[in-house]
Image 1 (cartoon, rainbow, N blue to C red):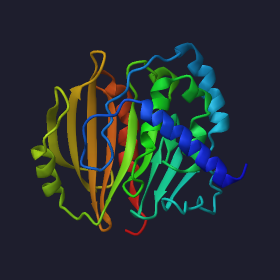
Image 2 (cartoon, rainbow, N blue to C red):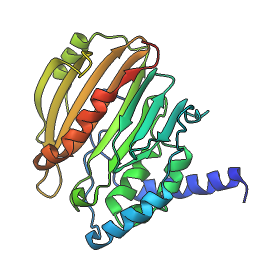
Image 3 (cartoon, one colour):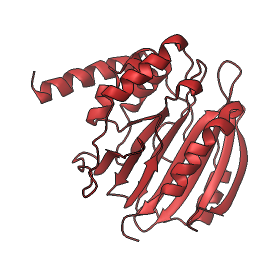
Length: 268
C-alpha cells in the first residue's frame, strides 16, 4: 500500500471515530476546542508494560550533536529526541523552540507520529487517550502546533488526562495587557466556570508573559484546571495551554513549568 493510500485509509478511520465521539465543550483564545478531559474506563494494570512498549515504538527523530531534526513540510515544525529522553520541539513558523520532559506523548495532527500513535499499546489500553487523539483530527495546524499527553504510569487516572498544547496566533500582535483584558471579559459556556487569576509574570530568563488560570466542572465530580501562558512575539502570539484535574495539578505542574521556562526564540 503506497503512502497516499495509507494516509487516506487512516484519515477515514480517524474521521469515523470522530463522528462517534462526544465533542469537547468551550473555546479558549485559540481556534481549537478547549479540552474538558474525557471520561472513559482504562486498564491500569497494563499501563506499566504499555509504557515500556511505547518507549520502544514512539521515537521522535534522534538529534545528533551537530545537527537539528528535519522540518515538516506540513507544519514547519520539528521534533527530536534528546539524550535525556526529553523532546525538543521547534516551531520554525512561530520562531520558537522548547523542551518537553520525558513521559509525555507528543503528537502533531496530520503528521506521521499522530497516525502511528493510534497503534501504540498505551493508547489502545486507555480510551481517554484514543478519544483525545480522535478529536485532534480536525485541529487547524496553522494554529494548533503540538500536543503533549501525560503518560507517566503513576499519573494515569481513569477520570481525566493531563495535556499541554502549543498554540500559535500568527500576526496577532496584541499586548499582554490587551490579552489579559480579553481573557477576563470573555464569556464561557462551561458549567461552573471560574476565572481564577490573570497577571503579568516573568519566565526564568526574564521574558514577560501573561499567566491566566481558570477552572470548570468536569465529569465524574472532577474539576478541570487550566493555566495559559501567553508570549507576545514578533511573529504573533504563542500560548502554552495546560489542562489537568484541579486536585492533581501540583503533581504534574512542575513539568509544565519546565516547558514554559525552556521556551527560547530562534532569532532573538
